[in-house]
Amino acid sequence: MRLSTLCYLFLAPLACRTPAPEAAAPPGNRDQRPALLQALDGWWRMEGDVLGEAVAYDAWAGPTLRGAFTEIHMLDSATPPAYEARIFLAADPESGEVIAHWLDSFGGPYSIPHGSGELTGNRIVFTVPYPERPFRDTFTFDPGEETWSLVIEARGEGGDWQHFAAYRWRRTAPLPSPQFQSPPVTPPTSAGREESPSRSRDRE
Image 1 (tube, rainbow, N blue to C red):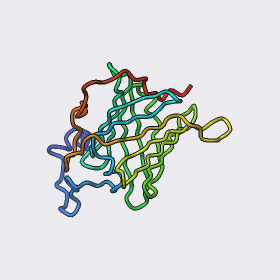
Image 2: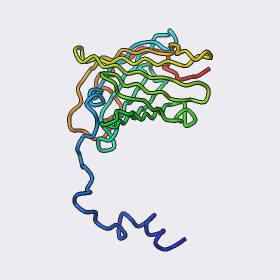
Image 3: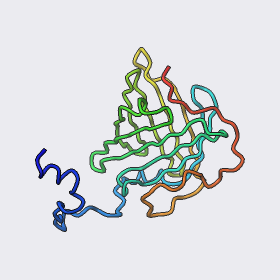
Image 4: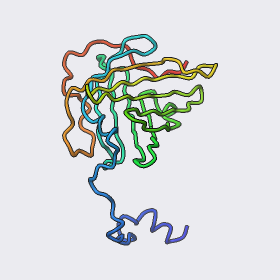
């Protein structure tokens, strides 16, 4: 391997990095996210159903990776929690294109592929083309009530979208701003958790 390549791979953060021109400097702590993604910020209580079975989650959402993404951290409110997920959302503020990465406690094989979609009005819609069948996630913001809903649909054999899960989000605490790293997983009100069926992305 050429010395210059080794230098780039291993020593770039130290001796090999040439200071960039000031005009090309990174944006620092500027929140790069569209306003609709910023509206997800805070601690939330999620209640709804998965295939008709009642579920409840505690969730936190806020900026991560220096404001380039919105991270949503969901934790099943059962004791002990049976499901956990982290969703990362980013959007091009000019085109409205959304990229989504859904990672959960089912493991690596269920974390790919990523989803893609768009911001339209007060909605974030993206489709994840899982090999078994695609899933479509629709986040809808109600600015008057400052609440969210999330509807997850799976494509049936005939090509129609069928109900998989639906959740209503109620904010339990606001998020301090600016904040560019994830807080502790524990939500602000964690006492008195009740047993709840797991929210599952099982695609049987």
